[in-house]
Image (cartoon, rainbow, N blue to C red):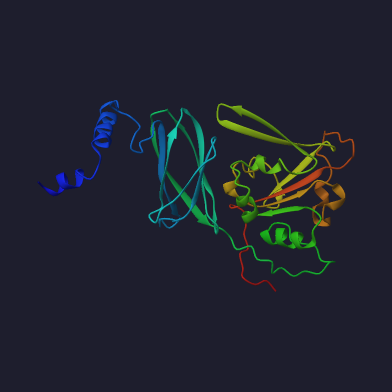
Length: 273
């Protein structure tokens, strides 16, 4: 009698025969033993130098599925249905990255995500109350945040909200309404004021335009300033209070929103005189 036979004798015969019977009725391709039906998205998260990023948080929308990268930067999310998905990777100290993918119920998609080192936004800007803040530098955001009066989100605040699209950041902002629709290219968010009749937007210190568009994805946003009350707009931005030519305003003044992106002119310093 070999070792296997000796070990088998310790189990009751009814248990052995029951286990064999259960195995016999499992159909081919069953999802037993940990297998999962449906599609799968797998991938790797690296930094801009090509090194794997471990312990990065990966989220999938819709469905709110989550995963975390291993020591080699790899992850997988299984059991997915036929749908369009947005997959996003984020980690503190990095700017997030996202991909939009379409997958069939039994499909498999591989993605590669790259995380950029986030700028160091230090509260070291010291400026007198009478001196205006800069206009086209990230120091403007730091300066105005110290003075208050608006709503200020830096890249850590934005990442903590775990939103994929910039428009989603405005759902909790008082006096701003968010319109949502889906077109052939995916979700589209549009914001509008609840009380006043216009919003003037700046991107990296300049009026938003085709050359300086408002970013759609939060992965490209490093800071955000929102002034819903015209009286709270700092003096260096008051020229943007008035509606553009041809527009009518019931109040005569607009809200002002300043977007700071990762393509803007950054002044990343560890100390500022």
